Length: 256
Image (tube, rainbow, N blue to C red; front, side, top):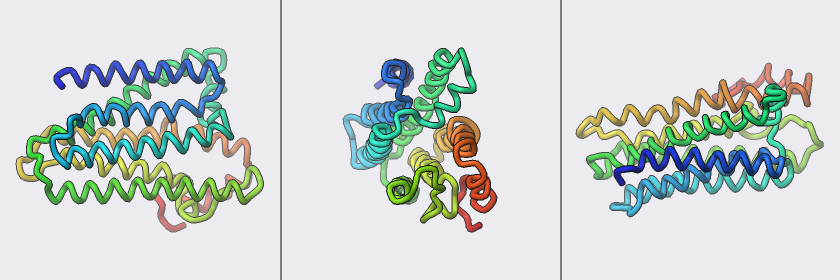
């Protein structure tokens, strides 16, 4: 599709504008990330269609599975906690300009979605479409990312169900990282970006796909991920979370 990049960019912008109006209408910022994930899944199907080979189908299926699992998890969580703490913290910091800044912020997220979609596109469009060793490595890393994120989310849900409100989750993967779900999301996009590489013909365009995991690392660690969430956790949990921060790493799940 010749105009795919234009269509996916404008489409992502429109979808995130819809996400803004959904948040404004319902007052539930939790829906935003569900819509964002499904946006990426939709355009991943579009970029791989009509699935010329099994490789295209595998790449698209990985992203669609990621989008449905993550979007569904956030949607179910939103039924219990309508306002996402991260967006709540951002809106508080924006004050009277919260509505305008949120709209602009979601348009930035549309650009971020476009970067991820482009990584999928570069993987599908690789000139040498034969399955190579790099594809096997990419698939394994992506599966590890998917599984790790699902396990981390499930452990957090089980902990919340079994413990009093405002308890600090420190079981399983959460003993080694304060945000293991974020870490494994980063791992997933590291795997996806590798599908664009071709060690036979050394395609230089593949380097562009690396913007996906680099961007995800920056967003999760320095923008919309850890900073606003931990600001909320410090405000709501106080000294208990401060102690947790002293003993557990923020992102990479290494021993204490």
